Amino acid sequence: MVTRANEVLSVSELAQRIPAGDERFLLGIAGPPGAGKSTLAQRLRDELAEAGRPAVVAPMDGYHLRNQVLLARNAMGRKGEPDTFDVAAFVADLRLLRETPVGSPVPWPLFDRAIDEPTDGGVIVRDERIVVVEGNYLLLTDAEAPGWAEVRGQLDACWYLDAPRPVLTERLLHRHTAGGRTPEQASRKVTDSDLRNADLIAASRHRADLVLTAAGRGYRLN
Image 1 (tube, rainbow, N blue to C red):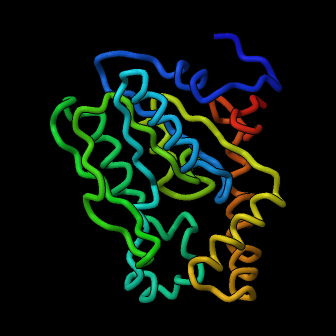
Image 2: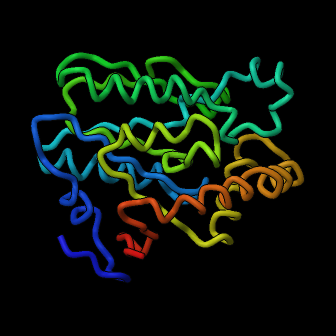
């Protein structure tokens, strides 16, 4: 399929770029925090379902280390940075998704923002042949963050969703204040952690199979 820079594709057209087959296909959606990865993943899942191609979203966020671990490491203020995830468990479960026959259950953890903790087995992957794996750090190398290079090898393809920095900032401030932080705390979190993470993630952008930005109801190819 020909790709043209600045072309705007609908979610349906993006879904058509995901190959059909008997084996499970793992599509990664990487990008900075606040770019809209979860929204794109859910829209793809719904579009694929309408086309008779069952899919499931498997977010990276379920692999956050638990708060008690972060507190013991004095790392609560850096929650969301690469070393505050259990990347070894994430890679192991990606491998399990690849190796487990379609129809057999694979539990996948989710992240509950209400309690700020992961929940084990939040979703069960069973009959779905398409798994949309969304997360910040899917394209990093070990030089950028130890342990993360193995992630890309478990994905059949990986797209990168970008957004302008002012958009990221606004969304992240809203996310943190909605989660209970004061405006000052939210601003500090965005400046000291989220946007530094965004810069790290941006360095991996060129490794993606597609680079997208939201454009109305569609997504522009970069």
